[in-house]
Image 1 (cartoon, one colour):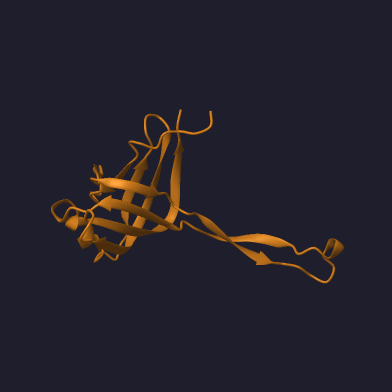
Image 2: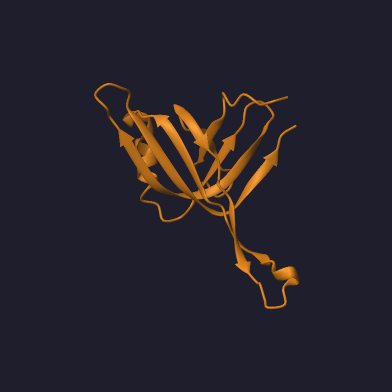
Length: 140
């Protein structure tokens, strides 16, 4: 199989409940960029490194950022704007269609940019900074 259809992928926002957290779909999402995980590397090259090749070891990991684009509706999405004021991470989930799996992560909203062009729809780009380890659940 050459590829999978992404249509129907959802981003959900947790309500922060301490016991059984409830997740609600964020409406009108048109594009989701899942966590861009990264790892630092440390150069441990020494004068006696074999054949003068640089050597590295793995360092700290970073959950990166999640970015979404949406058809902006202030009535639907202004609750997201209030998340910008939060200093504590909130839980989110990306659910891939059918049984393809999911990503769960805690994040802080780091950006909200809306657009109202004279010749197109209202839109917004929202950026989240992942805090801690994203949990990837494989599909079936």
